[in-house]
Image (tube, rainbow, N blue to C red):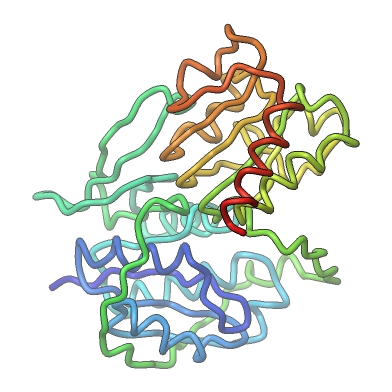
Length: 320
């Protein structure tokens, strides 16, 4: 069976959930070969093997931490040349898409970004995408070279499947461009204790209807009752009510959780583009004509200041 390269997203050896989802998808089209780079790379092997990786190529060269993006492209290209895979899968993060694009250019292949599903086809992997601000669903495949595909988090279940997970050292030759942009300092992001927005199974977002930063604790309380991440519309972010890192939409982050709750969000096309692929969508808005109600699975027409606290209380009561 053909091998499929999967670039591992990990933090000091702790593999992040979207990578395990990629391994599930990779098994549909071939035998997954994981590429783990940076500090703790070898420590990823056991988890990757438990989720279907037949082989784990590792390199912990300091360049991966000291410089941006290009060293990882060099490494992924080295892995590509070493095994001649049938496809290359990368998580659809900002960094992941840049790495994928640079690799596709180097190897002369086509690229598909933000896939939400993947299946085997007679002429190569077929990817599902939501396009034109998530107004349409398309199926496409790469027609030139080896497909390079980035996949959105929460697009597939995490399915354990024991495999060898054999660890092999990856020899990487770094080009001149790999040291062009150096990391000079790092500031750890303050933890909120909530899931990462793009990876969360549940997202609760607030918009213009929240009517001020002082009211966002209502949204946070609902999110915490569900173990969810907190998002915000562009209107709320631009008003300074919530950090830009939490913006969901075309110019913010794209999310695809199992459950998305939109509170006080009208449903402008820019926001819909970032959350329309959510599996179940619930909207709370006092305007019965709000565009958000056109796409929801469940809609609550009511004042969020009355509905959200009651919902939070009910969830906490049931949990208790």
